Image 1 (spheres, helix red, strand yellow):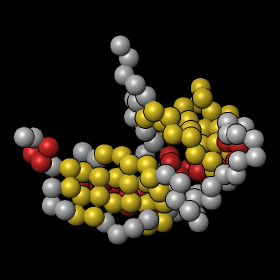
Image 2 (image 1 turned 180 degrees about the vertical axis):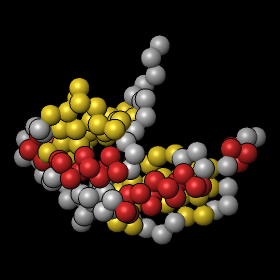
Image 3 (image 1 turned 120 degrees about the vertical axis):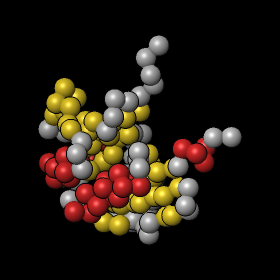
Image 4 (image 1 turned 90 degrees about the horizontal axis):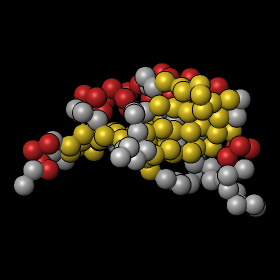
Length: 137
């Protein structure tokens, strides 16, 4: 049985700028599922972010339904795990260097650590690390 995959569809104002942002984070774009209205960002073997122009995104939603402005309202929190605290910092720092903005203060609970950022369109991303020993009974 193939592993289940997730495709997070995100509306973007400037597709080329958004592609460049995610490439600066170390992710690749799958050209097989990309065109002038969409770009498939490969986060892992099973996780993908589909960047869609607002017009393309609207074609997938119910007629008359507005697209949330992620710079003014939170529509979703997208959370990724990291293999270490350093990797969580690395991704968040890369996002900030690529033009993203801080979404909130870092979270440090000792056994769990997280950083957050907003991408160019304001979509809220979280990156967290959890000590494996904390999840074992």
